[in-house]
Structures are given as structure tokens and as C-alpha cells.
Length: 257
Image (tube, helix red, strand yellow):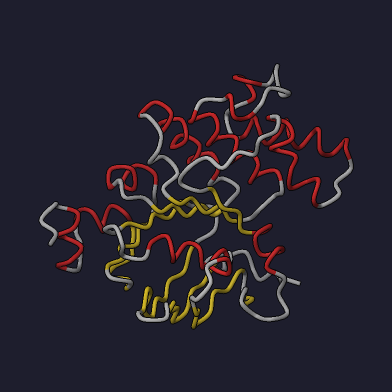
């Protein structure tokens, strides 16, 4: 069971986190706290460990054989890597949306209902939840009249928002996004970005992005990773306008490397 702690505590706390592959360290000694009901951005060059890091936050890293995790990741005070904690429950509390839309070859309705079916949710609740989740993901007004259509027939941007709706349906508390707009056209990306301001009213949102203007637009706080280490973390405006570290300044001004 994942125990609650007072509302003012960070929703996720990472302490001395390292991830090792057989021949190298991917992440080294990262400590960071994520606030609830806010958007946090994670930036850094390709290969710096951003994706590995976000996958540690809900134990998706478990699906990567050969990697060893050290340190702690606490959700509302409890270490999610504790042997007594069920990783399925972790991923229910901490949902994830990936870089490319991962829709299932079934109807729109059944895509959103998928997790609820696994939880053996009553059908009346499923129906209400599907509608609510599609509305929150900004899709109901576009496709609400044809929920039986195959999800694979939706546009790329609609598919990504469908994945967001599917994540919302199981009522997570934290939403992780790994480069959620990198495969989308600018208009579709703008629609996904617009959701973040709404989602943070109820969820902690953590977004990995290579798009620096996107981080500046949507994130209240931003973390900069380089070579598997946390270089700087703070309010987004401060990090972009008054960085404390030389590496940060070089990266955000394009003089990196």
C-alpha cells in the first residue's frame, strides 16, 4: 500500500538516484523534489539520461533488463522501489505518456477503457470515466459522436491526446510525459501543450522535452541534466534568464559543446 503524507509535501522526492548499465553509469547521484499540481520540465541534450530518469519515476525502468537502480524515489513519502510495493499500483498512481502515440488496435472507447477493464471497473463507471477522460484530453468535442471508430484512424495529434485520456482514466496523481509533442505537427503540439495548464490543476505534471521554448512556455520549474547528472534546478524564469551554472547558460544560449 502507498501511504499518503500531508498535502504540502512534494508528491515525488528523488534522493541520490543512480542508474547503472553493465559498462557505464547512465544517471549519477540525482536528488530532486517535484511539487504537486504544477508542471516541471526536464531538459538536456540527447543522451543525457532524460528518458532513463523519467522512467525511474514510475518503475518503467523495470522493463529495461541489465539496468541497476540505486537511491530512492518516494511517492508521497514511500519508496516506490520497496519490495512491498506493487509496481502495477505505482504505475496506476504515476501515469506515463510516451514520445510516439501508443494507441491499441481497437476502438477509441476501448482504448480509454483499457485500464479500467483490467481493474474490473463496473460498466456504468467505465462509460462515465471514458467520457470525462476524453473531455479532459480535449477530444470529446472532436470525436465524441463516434467512439467506435478505430483509434488508428485518428490523426497523430488526436492519437496522442487519446493516450492522455487513457492515462487519465485510471485516476493517476502524477503524469509523466516523455517528449510528448516531438512527433507532432505544430498545431497538434499546441493542443497538447494547452492541456498542461488544465492538467496541473489536479495533477503533478513532469515533462521531458528537447524543445527549450516549450519548457519555457509550460513549466513552472525546470531541471537541466547533462551526462547523467543534475546540473541545475529551479524556477523556469530564473533558469532561462539567470542561470547559476556555466553549463546551463551555454546550453540554453546555443553555445553548448
